[in-house]
Image (cartoon, rainbow, N blue to C red):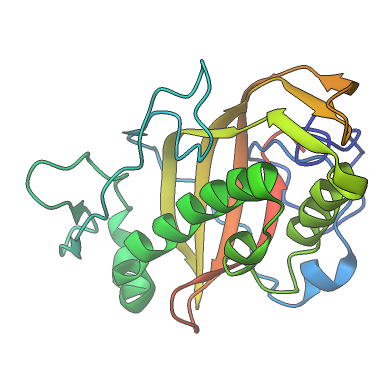
Amino acid sequence: WLGGKIGMLAPVDFRGSCIRTAAGVLVAVAMASAGCDAHSKPIVASPVSSTLATTSHVSLTPSASDSGSPSPATSTTPSPSGVLTPAAGSSPLPSIPSELASKYPEETAKVPAAIETVRNFFDGTNHQIDTGDEVPISATFNTKCQLCLKQVYSIQELLRDGHKLHGGHLHLLNVDAAYPSYRQTITVVVTEDQEAATQLDSAGKVVQTFPGAPATKLIFDLQTDVSPPQIWMLTRGDS
């Protein structure tokens, strides 16, 4: 469902847009051309990924399926080979091909911060679902990300007139790849899924239910000329 409005909107055909056709992602809304043209870049082959395993990432309202907790921030530094070295005791980060690391050293150094922004995107989405407050999620992207904006508006609509949502949290399962794909641009590819959800009216009566969404790929493109990096485009890997 938020695989419809990032689950809650019906899937659409992305063909004919500027979206790349080789990666994988949940959200199903057409991207406005402004979001595509504002930061265009050539297609870069996705590197072989090593995984960063996480559990249900920050569900602010616990539920039966939310058993995880937020991962601590990771301090990393790029090595000459392009492999980001995590702090002791932390989970491994995806490796970066040496040719990309050497070509974009400044962007490579910002990959950990870009991954953190993506984590905050998931946290902010769950927070908005639970509370209606869109401030945290809105801080993770800029207005070029039309799909991000549509997701926020879609959740607002579901919460209109005192309605509430139970469940529906997005879970960041894996960071599959993270690499500088162009000047001032970092691409982060993740696997996520989503809980089933129930919409209730102000009297607590069930309005509608939404099935959960299976594990899906999402591709985030972030601009690094701001700090922290911000999402400017979000696409599906199967599009």
